Image (cartoon, rainbow, N blue to C red):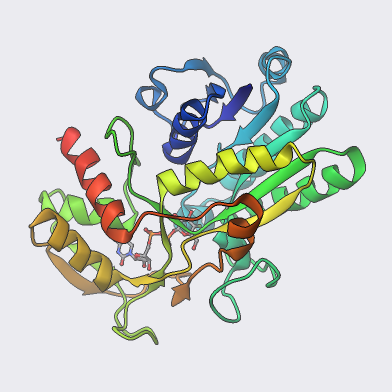
Length: 319
Ligand code: UFG
């Protein structure tokens, strides 16, 4: 079955394309390469274009049975500094894509949403019923797209799965694809940069949070586990029911725990220093993943150690 993977030359999209291929689907990657990398699309049919280009999208949408939408800007801090960029690309570009889908025969769509739609949750673990009150423009754009999907499902029968990712991390076990961001802001690749001396030290953003060691707790989920969930989501859509579900492990790790795992796995010291809190970082974000587990017969199987091991292997291929 052919599946259009929009944003398939990005970090999570490329892992989803690989998972689809492993499961016998025929992914077609569509990406405008604004933040994607053509090397991550190697081995796939690859079309350069963006969500606004309906003339380009229309014939492609006639060749596929489903769409996965990963194309978005995803830096929380940047979205606060430059919301116009986020509303333009994530919301207007996303809506243009969604309307092109609606104008085509395709009625199945999988959307990359985020735990940022919850903002600062009333408690953890976070369930899907908790209020969606994003605290930054990035989260707002994702929530607005979720809302559009709900309305299109109701009015037009366009079926969707919105996956609310927690902290995607790690790389494909093959080390052929992995995380590439410029600039790099995510914890694990930033710690690797500190190991390599590409930055003087890893800044720990705050050690005075109300957590056992004072550093923020996040639910790190292996990108391959995320990718596998998308395949399960597609199979679920064959039964015609839309859904929004968290994708996480249900277990949190502090920044300090991540750093000690990195030191154990790599055998190298991570130079680090305590820095001020990063604005907008909640103390603790951990998923309740039971809805996805029950619905899709899926579970995140890979540990933090697996995340660091595969991320390090990928990092070594790029030195
Ligand atoms: N951190 C540091 N130092 C760094 C980088 C990160 O201490 O140099 C800490 C952060 O404060 C946070 C944790 O490590 O506690 C993880 O930070 P990341 O930047 O790796 O990831 P985020 O949790 O900020 O971002 C993720 C997704 C976003 C999503 C967000 C929702 O990447 O797309 O979760 O909160 F919006």
